[in-house]
Length: 71
Image (cartoon, rainbow, N blue to C red):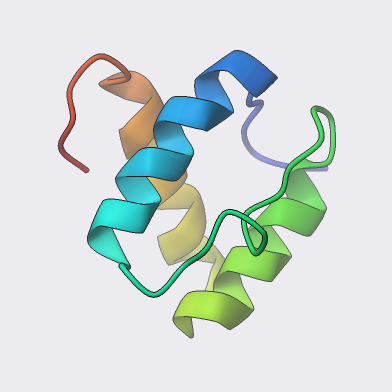
């Protein structure tokens, strides 16, 4: 089970933050369906070549400050 929960609405903002941090990521690579957090985390892990802990930390950080543009 995923350590986080991301709504489709929040994902749009989180995706923008990820694309700013990793400018090589495309919208197609970051497709997400609500409830599929585990597959999203795995996909991001391979795209940015980081471990699960880092990816989960980054996503949680983005969600905590959802209105802030920084990641």
